Image (cartoon, rainbow, N blue to C red; front, top):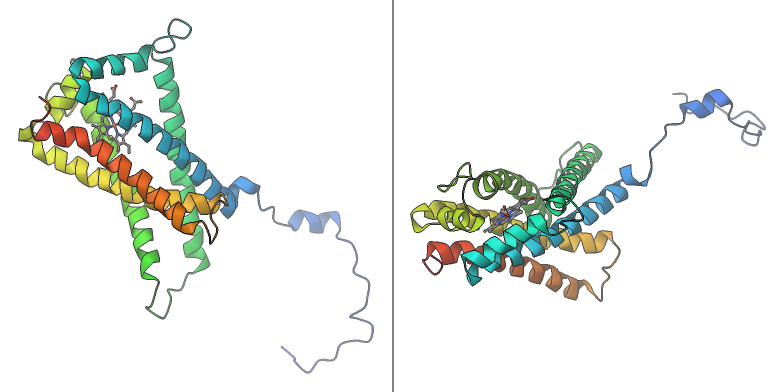
Length: 254
Ligand code: HEM
């Protein structure tokens, strides 16, 4: 490039002609809010909140096993008949399942596309190794935690919903499946659930905190309290979810 070139007199002040139709068509459309980084983070926050609500309800329902097999079976039956006779059998549960599948798919799509965008924005690794340790931990927990939870869910549904990997099989009551599934002889299944639920807890703790930031709730004065709320919700869910499997494996529930 000729850096000594002189600018023609008047060139800098020459009127800029308005873009022609052809030029306009070359302008790359960038998509709407939902496909922007902020939009994807909002999708993650909202779908995450939907899943947390499901988990709270699911955990409370599971705790009914402490009230006995009949109580738990009544609750499982109620889940399927709640809107009858206004709506067909299993309407509410089917609706919950559809909302959950849509939430999981959108949550994963947004997560993958945000991490791809971050990688594309930084194709060359940082030369300095001194990367924030907290950030590295969070990325690992969210990424591998998310994958572990997805794999756990496949096992979980085959075990307690479809009975395929459960000693009682499908032709049994939900309480029988649950109690047989965590029988002391199957301590390794309980161990698998412990690992998965702790992963869920770590994932939630960071996820809830991130959602507060995305939704604009966080600020310097509230950060400590919001961090505490995220940790509390995660801890309550971990303890509530692990209580039934542990009680069954240790013979408290038979
Ligand atoms: C660790 C303790 C857990 C126990 C004892 C447990 C128990 C159960 C049981 C008994 C069912 C079948 C319900 C029925 O057929 O009426 C079920 C379904 C399900 N569980 Fe869990 N669960 C646990 C943790 C989790 C976790 C951590 C998640 C999510 C990350 C989860 C997600 C689901 C889903 C998506 C279903 C299917 C709901 C449906 O039928 O539409 N569960 N669980």
